[in-house]
Amino acid sequence: MIARILLIDDDVTLTGILAEALGDEGWSVQAARNGVEGLRRFEREGADLIVLDILMPEMDGLEVCRRLRKKSAVPIILLSSRGEEVDRVTGLETGADDYLTKPFSTRELVARIRAIDRRLAPAPAPVAMGDAPVTAGALVLDPARFAVHWREQPVTLTRSEFQLLVVLARHRGMVLSRERLLEAARGDDTTVTDRTVDTFIKRLRKKIRDVDAAFDEIETVIGVGYRYRE
Image (cartoon, rainbow, N blue to C red; front, side):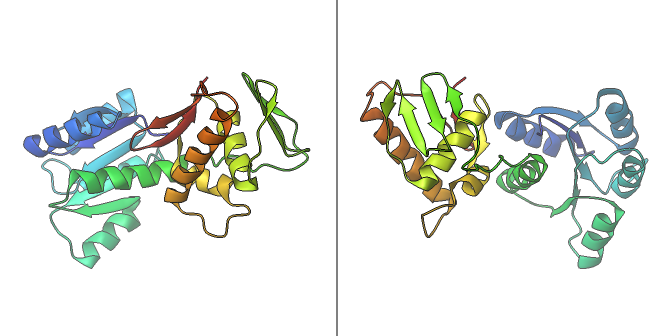
């Protein structure tokens, strides 16, 4: 999971804007003003993802990318003011994971980082009917019997709702994105989209609150997904 991002760019103004925007998303952000400093910083402190400008003095971003790839598989997003296809292909062939052409919006960069983060994250384990019961506080789910109990009271769920709730309960305390929950939610519903996950969550909360109005274990993490309280 991506937690630490290293920005390597000689544009101090842009770096400041990106650092603030990425910091607001919850990531820890460090910055380097050229390729040499960036390599040294990565060797000293490490990072989970690197945002790397191509056009820089001393050492350009492509050379930085080549050197990083000799020793690390850290995800790299290249930035460049040149948007020709040959430049994008060269960047990706050098070992970059993605390529953004300047100017770009911070929202687009955040979306690209989240896409990489989802690829890195392990998918929730599918629920099999022979699985052992899952317990999360007062919640007990039994895949073998397709049974759900909250505070010893039965709760009736659809297969998709059941699958989604099991994955949330198995990963208590972890924020799961809508995309990751989609895989768990596929079941007896004919169409499942990221917005359908929101609907499932609403239905889950309502059905359990019909048994206990105080139920508040499923948290919404704005802009990310959902989490079952530890």
